[in-house]
Every structure is written in structure tokens, then in C-alpha cells.
Amino acid sequence: MDYKELVFALNRIGIALGSETKLQNLFNLIVDEIINFADCDACSLYIKDPVKNELVFQATKTLSLKHRKGTESVFKSFSVPIELKSIAGYTAIKGETVNLEDCYNIPKETSYDFNESYDQKTGYKTVSMLSVPMKDNEGDVLGVIQLINKFDKKGKIVPFSKEFEEIILSLASQAAVALINARLLEANRNLYKALVEAFSEAIEARSPHTAGHSKRVAYISNLIAVHINKKDDGYFGNIFFSEEKLEELKYAALLHDVGKVAVPESVLDKRNKLEEDEVAIIKNRFEIIKFSTDFNIHDDKVKNEFLKQIEADLKFILEKNTPGFCSEDDKKKIIEIGNKIFIDFDGVEHPYLEEDEIYMLTNFVKGNFSPEEWEKMKRHVNNTLDILETVPFTDELKDIPRIAGAHHEMLNGSGYPFSVQGDGIMLQSRILAVADVFEALTASDRPYKKAMPIEKAVQVIGFMAKDGELDKELVGMFISDGLYQKYLEARDNGQINV
Ligand SMILES: [Fe+2]
Ligand SMILES: [Fe+2]
Image (cartoon, rainbow, N blue to C red):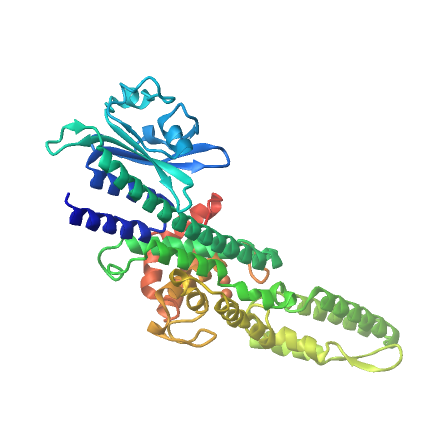
């Protein structure tokens, strides 16, 4: 390699190392690049654990054995104590390069010895070795790189030359700088992850009924996206979610309901149309109605008829207090009962039900929610957007607010908060919408509804797709490729880890 080629190669490697931000990928890349550059048969990388004073074996490659750590059980990660008696340990402690012509013929005066166990296990024959420290800008050793069996032009194993030591040493320093950057980015990513999880758990801690919802929605969303990645033809054939995009979707799913922090608990946890204390007041009032009837009517037959009717009215009201559909006839009957009059012990007339009680029992739009409560509930998406838009997400995660903020939008424009239509809704949000609806339908812990039988839930999302609410391609794939079964299996086996 002439000087120009050398500079060019070093530059290229520097750029490649600098652009890899995932630690394990970086370790593998360092090993690959060094083998290529140095024209040797094998390379191993150890990273220093200063707390345990150990070197942790992170990556290796042996061209003649075609091994890479993780692909063969013999290459399981291990640690070695940092001691002068091992070659790697010596390199790490002294910060010096060790250049050995023949590992089985090490000069007697050295403190280190060659560990033959690897060769014995694999039948490999280590001859020449170059062990270099990975030093950062301040000269601190972060790890050790070992190059093994240098080839000459004819492919014969020869020692590593003296001039070569310096170049590899500078390459190892480039690797050290890349390692520092990757570590910082990883720490950053871990911080994001921890914050997202803490955030999502905080919302769910508010209501025991939604505990685990976001995690399950994230699991389903990821299941769908990963499945799309496997398709190379058909509707999703051209779509591929990179690792970063999958992460973005997962975080958006974990955070999609974060706006529920601002929804009053009375709405969030609402079980029936009227709250327990309101029901207690009504029951109490009906006792008074019975007393007053008993007091005011003297004909026993008539009195009994009246008392029976009062009991029946109360029973009807209590029955209609539960979640679910209420027919027009039922509403009429509630109003009729509510408007009946009784006279209290002071001779004052009162209706059986107060106006707001009648309102709560007859004016609800979803489950148990009155229109006002439903508006408050719907606001959670605006809140989610407001909250997430204040977070300075990295470029890789910048679409989280947009994805999460559209989880209740429907393709036909019937969703909320912005009634966005069709292509205006990102695919990730459509995935989230399918996941959100299916999870909610099949969850057993919602206050306002019981879990739906699976076949019914599948039918419901099918109808929602047919009506142009959910994406029909996604729902079709979710059902026909058995993704919903995979999800339910994982859920029931307690394997929802995101
Ligand atoms: Fe939601
Ligand atoms: Fe949700």
C-alpha cells in the first residue's frame, strides 16, 4: 500500500467508524475493517470494564474459521482480569503495543504468556500477533485490539512489521473515539427509553383499568411493522421500517395516551353512567318516596300498587345505569319516571330524578360518557400532542408526536382531533389505530366494558375497515396472517415485553 492509498484507507475507515452509532455494530465494524486493512486472518476486540478491572471480549472474526462472536457458541462473551500475565492485560495496563513473531515462542523475560486454550479448543494455530491498546484523546486505554496471523502477498503467515504497529495504533485510537461517541449516543438512547417508559407507566398508574394498555399497543404495533418488513411483494412490498423507525413507532405507541394525565379521574375511571355516590342519593330518595307514599295513601290496595311501582321504577333506573346501548323507548321511560312527583314530609313536591340525573342516564355518546365527558376524554389526544411537541426528540424520533397524535384519526375523516383523511394519516398512525382498537376490544380490564370474545373483536375491526375507518390492508393482513393470534398468545403467556 503506497502512502496515498494508506491515507485514503485510513480516512475511509475513520468515516465508517464515526458513522456507526450502535455499540455492537461498531465493535463488529472495527474488527472487519482492521482485518481488511491489515490483511491478517483474525482480529479480536476487548473493552475495558474499569469497575470490575476486567477486559470484556466483545467481537472477533477469524477468516479461516469464518467465525463471528454470537454465531458460534464457542465465542460466547467472556471477561478476563486485567493482569500483566496475559497479553491483552499487559497491553491494557502498560498502554503499549505487543508485537509477537510467534506466540508459541515468547521471549522468557516477558511477564505475559500466550493462552493456548483457544487454539486447543478450535484447532487453530496462532503464530504472529499484534496487540494494541485503544487509547482515547487523553491517553487512557479503553480496550485492546488483537490482530492475529499476518499474511504476506503470497498468503504466508509472517510477523507484523514495526512500521505497521504505528498505523494500527492510530487506527485503534480512531476506534476509541468512535467508541466514546457511540457510548454517548447509547447513553442518550437509554435515557430516552427510560423516560418514555417512566412516562407511559405514569399514565397507566392513574387508572388500574388501563394498566399495560400502552405496552400491549406497542407490542401489537411492532408485530405489524416487523411483519410488513418481511413482505417483498403485494401492498406492503415496498415498505420497510429501519431499526430506528421501529423504535420511533414503539415509543409513539408507548406514549400515545400520555395526554390522559390531564383527563379527570372521574372521567377516566367511569364505570357507570351515574357514579356510586349519585346512585346512593337516588336510592335514598326512593326510600323517602316509599315512606311518603306509605304516609299519604291510606287505602292498602292502592298503597301496595304504588309501592310496587316505585320498586319497579328504581330497579329500571339502576338497570339502565350500566354501560351500553339504551333504546329510545328506554330513554322515554327514564324521563317519564324521572318526572314523576312525590311529596316530602314538609309537603314540598319533588321529581323522582333531578334534571342532571336524567341527563346523565339518557345523554351519553360512548359507553357511559355524557357529551361533555366524552369531549374531555377526546381531549387526551390534543394533550398528547401538546406534551410530545415540547420534547426535543432526536432526528431519528422526530415523528413521534405526529404518529401518536393521530391514533384516533380515521381514514374516512370521522376520527379526532383533526378529522384527517386518507394519506394525511401516516402509516405508523394507522398501525397504531388498529393496535389501539384491537387491544381495547380484547382487554378485560376496562371500566366501561367487558372483554369482547375474540371472534367478535376480529369482526368489529373488519367492519371498521369496511366502513373506511381503519386501514383495510393493515386489518386484512392482521387477520389473515394470524397476527392477532400471535399477539393474544404472547399476551396470555405474559410475554409482552417492549
Ligand atoms: Fe387514545
Ligand atoms: Fe389507547
